[in-house]
Image (cartoon, rainbow, N blue to C red; front, top):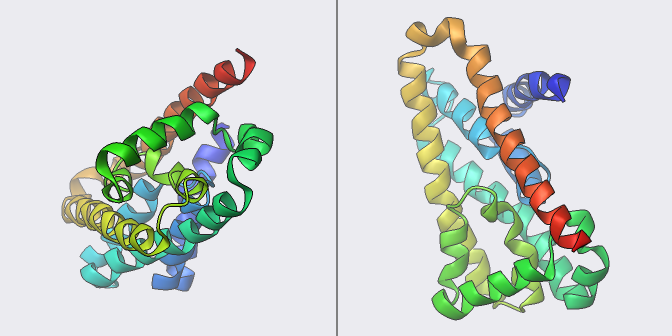
Length: 204
């Protein structure tokens, strides 16, 4: 796990350096397909490139939002195709339970299509909301629109954070690697909590 933590940030940086904006789209799409690549690292690094004059601020945020939509659509389609039987049979491999679906149903009942806008600005929840959306047969057009808008705000916030960090990079240059590790470490700890919490549900 320590090796994974230490190697992921350089890999993310390498992808973005070599591919540019499409690299941001690619990585954010993977994150939205339930692959644990934290957008906090992807977009913060994109913000650093904005600060250096390599990326445009608005295009970097747009790439992040587009990537979220690209990765969310297959997950939505999978949920729409498989429905509840798919979740009951394979949900444990995606760490999704019927309780999660019931929770998503309550959110949709309370906020309607706006659920997908709100969830795209919540860590972890934003990654897993697409499959329940498909299972619940949420209207595809609004789902895509609200996914894009919520992800766009999320992307702008993290790219801005990267820009601000870059402006003070000199003060933090000796701690940059540790900063990377800290972000990934926090994500791993929260992810482990999520896994353990859900494994208990499956075993109960």
